[in-house]
Image (cartoon, rainbow, N blue to C red; front, side):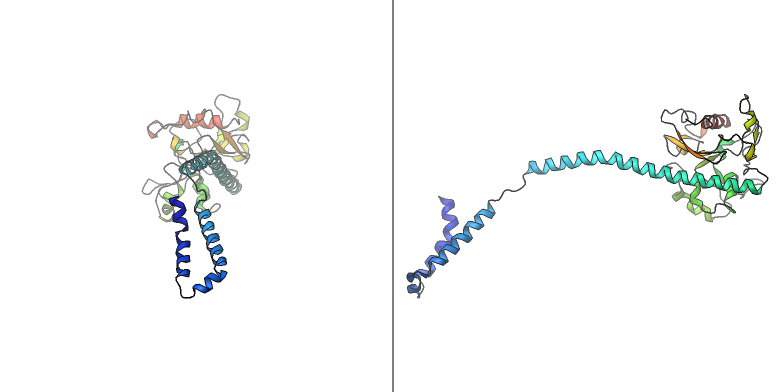
Length: 288
């Protein structure tokens, strides 16, 4: 009853005002009825609006839970799509490096770019884990400040620095972190791709110790020449596999979800060795 009185109190106030005005005759003549009906209609509409249902706390919490579930479902798919896109960019980089190697060999008596860290004798004093290096630091002996390995492609064939860096790389040598070193003379420059700088001759692949060569046309067509960095596991770009450039200039994906290749790669720099790098290359020679 109190609520009813509260809702209609403004209406009674208006009626009181009309009755006590000097023109009370105007009200008595029946002209006040439309006014009363209008006031009642407006008051009813106001009450209806105030009584409309609203969101409760439970509604809000349920909505938030549904949104959280949808996000948890979508995010892995988005991450997978992002990694796939990066693999495609990396594959393009490796393919262009292969074209650069072919152009170099065409102008250098069929020989692929040499590396000061790798010789033609198996084992020996090689430092095959260093073939991610593109330019040797100065001062550092007779080769100081010179391009080396894949770096020999920079001046005449592949002048775009980003080609030597994988967008999936999360280790020490990300392009964004070392881009400035490309403008500084004599500084060491590291890339994200391991370079073999030699390959087993097709005629000797069945032997226990294949003959190694730098002549592109003599290397076994399926032999791997370029892959993800394998100096340490931090240098391995994709974690679940690698884009591999082969001697026939094809690029294929080597899946390593089982971890066979990554188990060979050293966990840190204290374990690096040419033996491990050669084991990794031998694994990459066999497409899976």
